[in-house]
Length: 215
Image 1 (cartoon, helix red, strand yellow):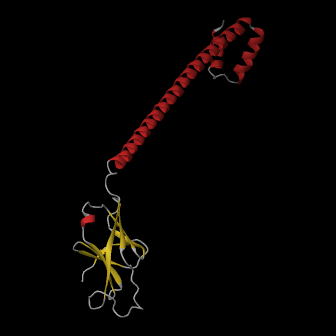
Image 2 (cartoon, rainbow, N blue to C red; image 1 turned 180 degrees about the vertical axis):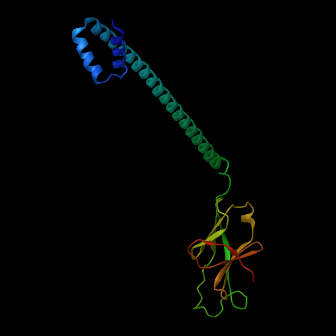
Image 3 (tube, one colour; image 1 turned 180 degrees about the horizontal axis):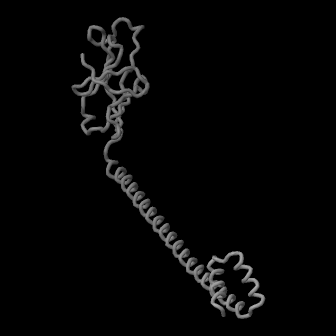
């Protein structure tokens, strides 16, 4: 076969053939048997090479997808493992609060004495009995509640004879402390006495901060 025909075939499959080359190739495919066989052989070789490239690309793509899926499964297993550890820690924390903190008193109810003071500081009514509105009457039911998340001690006059006090922590000697509730007509408020401390109580159905009172 002529050298120029071989070059013509190479230019065609390399994508370098011009218009005149295409006319020549079509003519030779019809008229030259040797050229046609050489052209078909070259085409078959190119097709085989292309198929091989496609096969390699497909395998590489499958390997990449498989690697990505495996990586995703590993991340999922890691997330599940971390979630399981977090759940176990929460369970342990809950059990600790339930088992080890359950012996701490969460509520303490005491009945304390109640009395009234007139303007002169004595006991009994002031004489303006029709204008007096005591916050409490008779014996006072003082209920102590513990809330470890609360920094300040608060109180609430739940009813006219019930005082609810919430502390960060209830101490064991609280029930042995000297407690009393006094209504002061001059202040028009109640005083809560516990040990050596005196606190001012206003008529407040909502929760209020317990503040020390200084005469």
